[in-house]
Length: 269
Image (tube, rainbow, N blue to C red; front, side, top):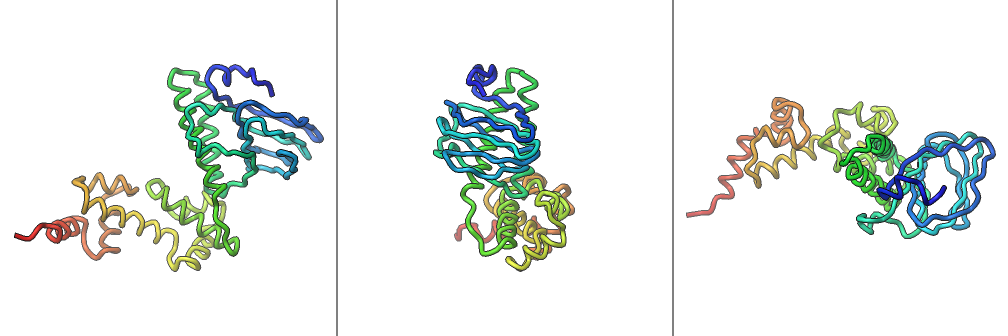
């Protein structure tokens, strides 16, 4: 691909589709800018700085500037290419070396949504579209950076349980229910309940409730926020559900918790 793509030249970011037929080969080359390749469909191989890796659907590749790379298509391979310059990006998001990554089920779903948003904003071409693209790009790179730091686990189920817990810790405000969680991981509700309970002795939904209520307790004790606002912020759709869950976990209502904590924290005369 040429350095002279118009969007990259004008805005520093460009996203486009690259299709490869059976047996196609993109000879070894390098760029002065960064690239993220995301395999939408098919299978093939990618050569990164002399090492060949298999690539298939949902694999991602981050290519650093001046890093030699080549692409070989074993079957009809469709890649989404995100080319960008480093201007304004935190250096911690930018890899020093090119690498291949296989995002987890949660990251994969989030990554696809971010890439769709990048395509949409680029198609709009409005004054704020480039800013939106920069924000999405940073989120894409953050997903890849976290995927690269994934800690080893003794087995696949433990790894899935750890990823599920980390996902709940950072997405507690947007998870709907157990079906939503299972869809994001690509496993059945029954299976994720089993692997999570095996490792943490509670189901994912029970853990989600604990995370939300612990945060709510912190807000009730430290912030002068309306209870309805706290309910909304921690991810509950209704006050009745929030009150019911809060009392089940703590034994008292949010109002009582706030009053009790206020009395406990009041200075002695």
